Length: 475
Image (tube, rainbow, N blue to C red):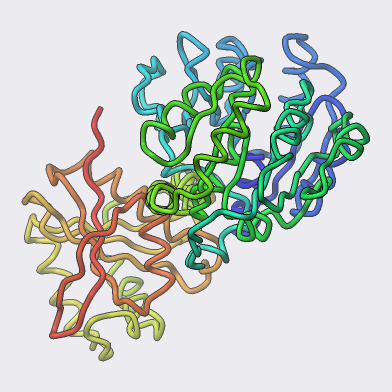
């Protein structure tokens, strides 16, 4: 469902999104269409050549800015063919299943991703690690909800994927017998064992099918038993302590990494797991409030909920066209600088006289310490400006504004990211620093989405100011 999370972020930025899939998976299709996206079924499936042919035709019809390929069936030849046809490609990966990747963006949100030695085409942008974990937008309003860690965990949530073909859930349900817990067992609409599980349920458990309020379910629980997949990122975001079961090969490293970081407890491979073992580990965790509290804090520190915004900014930044500002740009810069929304966010909100602006602009252009870029979209329509001061030092300070006519389209993080990439290519600055008023929520979100990290607050003109930094990426 990570692609659905990205699609939700894209739709919020007014992108059109089309899902291509072989087969009509009704529960998934309903969720896709509920997010405002279009669902298109493919007659063939890779490696049949018809899959690539249909995909290329659909991408051309949609005039797609990006193609996102999520699946192990999309091999090197498939990726190369998409790019050779002129499309930008984001390849979604879990454990470096290919020898080489032919992609503009390579995405892996797993905890071990940065340890993998990827081979990719020159210029590939790597989005690696849980900072890019893409969560369903339904989770984001729960970002700052406090989590109570009771002395004894009494409420358990069980969720082992939408289908669970090996019916591992049955072993967990059996483990619930004799435990002093209230349990909610969640299964997907594709689970063919539902009737068996319902008949097997002990009195302390209830079965929920194809739930749509997963954040509320996780908020209710004190402890969860999950498959070691993407649901773990949702639990980490909400600070929910988890016991993880490895249900597939691509989950081994996730379970091991989260266990190593103290965010979850790995119960190992499902084939080796007995109900008795599950009950024993739950029995250990239920009274250990100190351990659960530490797991909760570590999870929230790992996943901040901004992953989908960061990924979208990386995709949208490829659509930004930058050029150095020239003398004739002075009036456009002045008008943007005097926009009421820009002035209210500035540290000195007074209107700027034209004569003062002209003197300032010429001084900046001559200084050699400032880089000012004008931004436009692929069609040449103006987006705004981004300026960096102190570009000859170790850190440059950034100032950015989006044209009023383009606000609400998600260009802020994309413009900032594109500007930083251009600065690092043009100048020697090792990092970019941003100073933002604490009440300026749009700018706070924009810099977080542009891959800036928060630092300690500083004071400007006697007022506390939020500080963010983005460092030059390693090769």
